Length: 293
Image 1 (cartoon, rainbow, N blue to C red):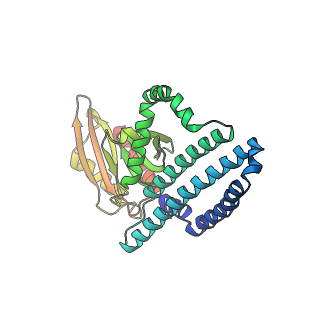
Image 2 (image 1 turned 60 degrees about the horizontal axis):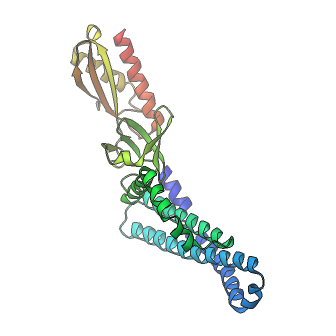
Image 3 (image 1 turned 180 degrees about the horizontal axis):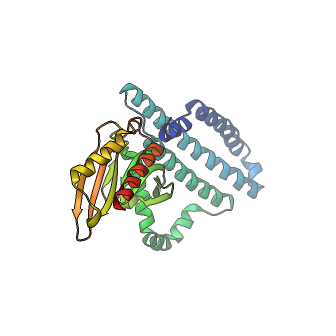
């Protein structure tokens, strides 16, 4: 089971979500009832009234958000089953991110009510400040919007092996700010969401591709005939037929410069896997070092 499948399985637990929703409703109903029936009692206890009213607002808003979330996830699950399409975690991730943001806003508003602050008056008083904040954090805001577009576009999702500009690796998370990539060196790289829309992207997982590319350079005085180099590397890869499809190797000359010749060797793995890919890359690069020496 890959990363996106694990995420979907964790996220779409409709029975569990429905149970939690029912519990919220069962708590919400008596609180609402007491606010209506015992209004005079709460009028004498203003602090308690604010706290209970704030809790009531939080629960009512949270119930609406949870209900919409469950409906959308249920629709997406049924749609995937009906059209026999694979469920990609980005849509589920997007719904969960939006639900989290809305719940955070509801919590802030509820806390304002609990402390006796009128949210409407508060928002009116900070209109100019909010405009200044929006201007200062415009990159962050556009990053959030870009993140939502990425999530709902369904083009990138958890577990995809991608190349975004100079960064290459497996997507382990998509946040409202950046895409988190685990590269071939096991480094965690965070790529801003805006960057995705300004550079070329290669999604090998989307194409179910098992192709691996290795670029290297050879000094002019150590280079060899292209066909001889191709045969040497092809013979090397054929020794690892369990990992590499036989005779799937291609060798390209990328550039011939004053002191070096740049090459790219491409081959197809028998199975898509990060460990397997890195193992074969190391074998190729070790052979290149032998040629260079």
